[in-house]
Length: 115
Ligand code: 5GP
Ligand code: ZN
Image 1: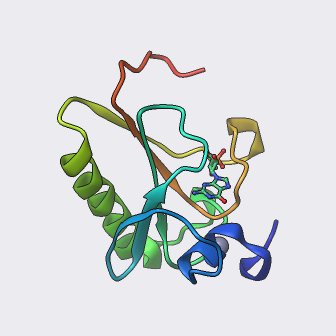
Image 2: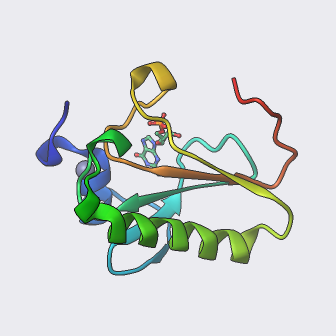
C-alpha cells in the first residue's frame, strides 16, 4: 500500500500535480479524471488520505458524507440526466490509485451490470 507521501491524489490535493479542479469543500475535492470513460467523468476524494473504502473508520463518516455531497453538487451542475457513482475497492475490483475516490460518471447511457 502506498502511503500519503507517494500518493498521487494527495499531490493533487496539495496542488503539486496539476488537475482540473471543479469544486471543493472542507473535506473533499472534485477534479476531472485524466482518462475519461464517459462525457463527464469526475473523481471526488476525501482530503484525508484513506487508501480505500475498506480503510474508512466511523470517525471518517463526516468526510465521506462531504464526498457524496460534493459528487452531488458536481452532478447537479453537469448532468441533467442520470449519473452513476462508482467506488472500486481493491485491485480485483479495478482500483489502481490507492487513495479513496468516487467516480462520477454520466453524459451517456450506462449499462448494468458493470463489467
Ligand atoms: P481506479 O481505477 O483506481 O478506480 O481509478 C483511478 C482513476 O484515476 C482512473 O480513472 C484514472 O484515469 C485516474 N487518474 C490516474 N492518474 C491521474 C492523474 O494524474 N490525474 C487525474 N486527474 N486522474 C488520474
Ligand atoms: Zn492520498
